Image (cartoon, rainbow, N blue to C red):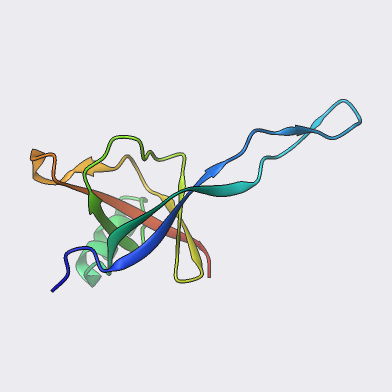
Length: 107
């Protein structure tokens, strides 16, 4: 089995731009990086617990260790966009694999 079989795009929001009337238009979501990862489906028990704690999520994302991906970014996978639920964490503290919970925001 391939450890990270899925192609993902990490998105970052661009800077707001002037709207010509003294205000600003919201930034666009653009590709920051394309990575390999593993999008896993949580168990029904994990989903239930997350809803009980009012922190629902739809997928687990595992990817090679790196520190530049943060919870202000989004993930594009298979035509769906996800937001981070909390900060990505070093899985097992070994600086090998990161784990993040994601919530579907469109799809």
